[in-house]
Image 1 (spheres, rainbow, N blue to C red):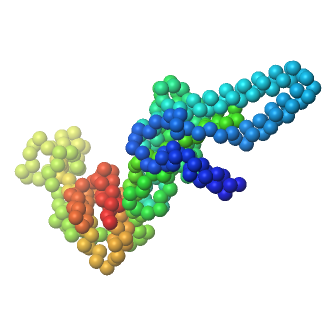
Image 2 (cartoon, one colour):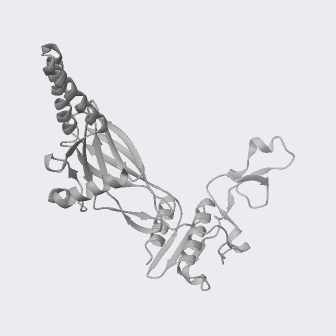
Image 3 (cartoon, rainbow, N blue to C red):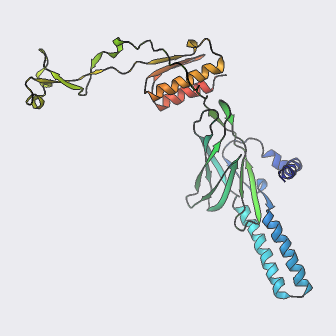
Amino acid sequence: MRDILQRVQTWAERRLPALTRYRRPESLPIELHRRRIYIVPTGFGLGFTVLLLVMMIGALNYSNNAALLLTCLLAAASAASMLVAFRSLDGLRLAHVRAGHAVAGEPVELTLVLESQRRRNAIRVDLGHDSTAFAIDANGIAQVVLRLPTLRRGWQPLPRLRLWSSWPLGLFRAWSWLHPEQSVLVWPRPEAAGPLPHAAADDARHMRLHRGDELAALRDYRAGDPQRHIAWKASARHINLLVKDFEQPQSRPNWQLDWRQLPGLDHEARIARLARWLGEAQAQRRHYSLWLPDNQIASGSGPLHYAHCMSALAQLP
């Protein structure tokens, strides 16, 4: 059955130039209109049509005006449902597509922002095997979240999206294709295990104490300590004077993540090793810098710095 539907779709795309034209990538925003919305009867709609034909033949055969009136009313309701299904998509606009972050092999989360000037109900959007339903309320905006599977690192173009609706009676299906001209950046997958980077600054010189602004501890009084640092309340409970110590150890040394430190690995193995090092540095809340061919990223920390470094790795040729 799926092969038959695929052949019918291929035949229709060859016969309908407009359908082929809207298969190409388009820049946002994308708005649906009557030239790109198609309507086909559902399986339930075909069965209902056969039932109406049987009812009409029976009513005409037996000259039953009541049965004929009922048949006409049901046919009018089915025709009206086709118009409602069309209007559920007409004027709908895809305004933005926001993508999250994901490593290769994991799905990336896409957020579709759809806008409309009126309420809409029971609309579905399909992206591969992922499908979800949404409605647009009086605010005129709906945010739909889909998951796009990924295979490899780098820029991945968005596939076609199909919007369709069989509301209100399920007799007809109105559908249309959306193909945004946009790509998402997939991060490289870190290696499973391996050595940690060598930090040349990991010695005792970088762990010395320095004068800080926050209280670190209380210690015994030493000659030359300023009187304003004496903890009088705490000293009253001890024999010796106690002094507020504002000396704190310096922050942990930086990690210098360098492409040139991995000469024995191939191109993709180097990227996977650096991706794992970035994850380790982020988990340990270290400051780290990254050296790549034609790209040097200064030392930093935090989620934004991590995203910047991982994106630079993903865009390597």
